[in-house]
Length: 445
Image (cartoon, rainbow, N blue to C red; front, side, top):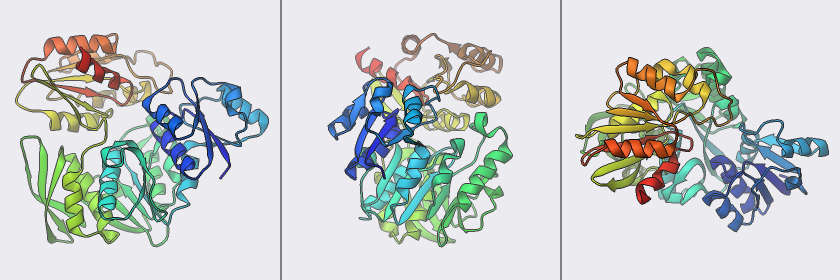
């Protein structure tokens, strides 16, 4: 590894975690981002040099530059690195190189549930005294952030499919939670997406194994040459005698290879989290962790920030924030949040391409919401697409029978939703972009 690494976009959740890993190895780290944040401030305290602009001068002294898909070729730091002949890696390439330093890499992939399942695995392995190093795409309470520096045996990480990023990983345990239509700006077709997940599964090292969803049709299409351990009905691990409490948290009887292993009780709501917990359980059992520790860790597991995060009750209205930005995730989160009162949803669509390619799916996923309020689309790395706007989506939702309205800003969304919700109702803030800026409005509004 180089002795001075510069990160472009260092404030990102994954970039910052990789930077911290290098800092823990006494490697000099610098980075740039557009604005100060709690993440960049924390990195600065840890010894990183942070610049709040993008300038050729920022990479002075660096002999490796790391960038993300959001960074374009015309970035002045990229241009300068090329001019100087400095080695350039994308984030996924660096993650792969870091992972090579661990004996057993556990990678969690899938369209949905990666952060939650990675968090469940982290909790189980920490409770079991395995001292894993954990790289996660969210801020997990048990590790106090998005990274836990542990020993050199286990490296537990999320594995993102976008741009085939996860193919840099050589995993001991490869988890595929589900495969659904997403990132079509890159993959274009479902066969191409499934082929990518197939390559990820077959990247598992000799002697390793693949944990996959037995009830997901696309997961069943994987043609894997490694040991496959499926979860879900009819799989190696399945849930029976399922019940839920008033908070929509589930308890179930765990069966492994047909034998009852007792009850698992979850503290995170939603039926989908049963399947996330089954995947985590298979990996934990395979790594020799006792079922008693698994039960305890899962019962104590609390979600990462922005994963069904309960902000509080304001004027009798419960407010929940969740990262859901794909139609399947949105439907699952609405189901988990739905109680006796009315449910108002503020959804910030994430990227123009996802909104375009999943338009029809978005028209069906808000069932259970009284009104859907749509601020402008969060562009991330993208340029606008003609007729792909929140106002167009709101009109289409209304035509489909779902009450919806578009607004010009997050501040306007706050004003609108608080004027509608009454005591006993709930508000759900959904999105993977800037919608978290609405959260302080409820605390100060």
